[in-house]
Structure formats: C-alpha cells, structure tokens
Length: 81
Image (cartoon, rainbow, N blue to C red; front, top):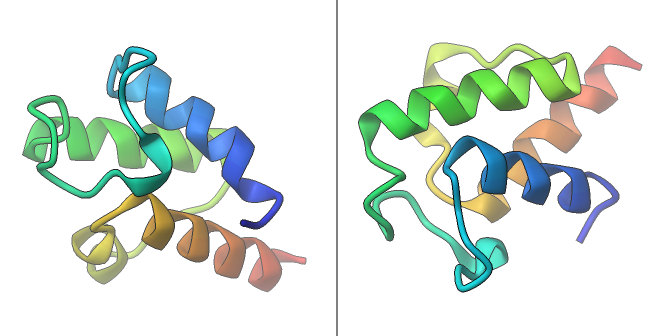
C-alpha cells in the first residue's frame, strides 16, 4: 500500500476507537458497530484534519473501506502538490 496507509491506519484506530483485534487494512463500512453513519462522519473529519484534505459529498458517500480511503487521500494529496 501507499505511504498514506500507515498514518491512515492510525486515524482509523483513533477515530473509530478500535482495538488490536480489528484488521484495519481489510475493514469495510459497517463491518463493525463503530463504523456506522455517525462513526463515518467522525472518521471523515479526522482524515481531513490529519491529511489537510477536503472530501466532496460524493467522496464521503463512496468511502466504503480502508482501501478506498487510502486511494482517495492519495489522489487528493497528489492534486494538492
């Protein structure tokens, strides 16, 4: 995975209050109770803060897994460079 993945993993763990038993890299929306609609918005805000990016509405809706989030953040960062 990209260089974004390790830091994004930390954001997922903190924003969703995950324990060591969760396989973050293969996590998908609603796989766990913490990643519900409220958790999703908290996660989006935490990612935006950590990576200094801003998701549009379609991206927020389309963020369906950790892998998708990695791709989105990577793409947004490349646009900002």
